[in-house]
Image (cartoon, rainbow, N blue to C red; front, side, top):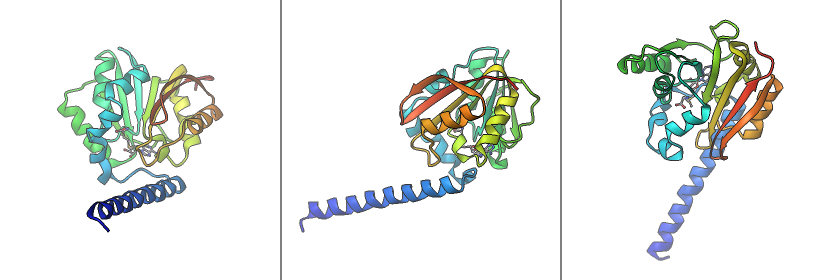
Length: 216
Ligand SMILES: C[S@@+](CC[C@H](N)C(=O)[O-])C[C@H]1O[C@@H](n2cnc3c(N)ncnc32)[C@H](O)[C@@H]1O
């Protein structure tokens, strides 16, 4: 076998191994959804993410505007949080929630380093949000819904803390091991009283915006 053929064979084997590992990982994560280990936090900051879709495009698709009261669930280490806080300005406020102590601590550090007075960070579960009914204009989740074990309960909780007519925005990226198909996200959201009002992007990276039909 020539050198080129051997190299091609090894390349195919590596590719096949990677695909098989991805499939196994995704099936496992589907069966047992849970917050990803804090060890993967650095992956959330890789520049490749910006190539998939620049951060400002994702935030524009969510539809943030100055003065809004905003909730981010599953904020992680804040890849989107600080930029979102700048978009809503000092007259707006952003509550960033994560269920993992390490992610919340790293995020709080980042927010304080960036001197953002309009962000509060809370360690909390999506299924038990520490806010009164009808608090927020917008709630957004970026590559987080797939990690939440009880999606129905989390979405009902999101509806509760949104104002009537408030906006729920869900962004998913295929590169994420917990990726959810558009149809699944729409199904979950509609089942608890959200109506799909906007769709941005494509199967690789998409944002779906919903309106709360019933309020809290
Ligand atoms: C893939 S990371 C995405 C972080 C951030 N949104 C981003 O795009 O960079 C998902 C985050 O959701 C959080 N998470 C998972 N399940 C959660 C839950 N039930 N309640 C709150 N946060 C949760 C994880 O701890 C993790 O930080």
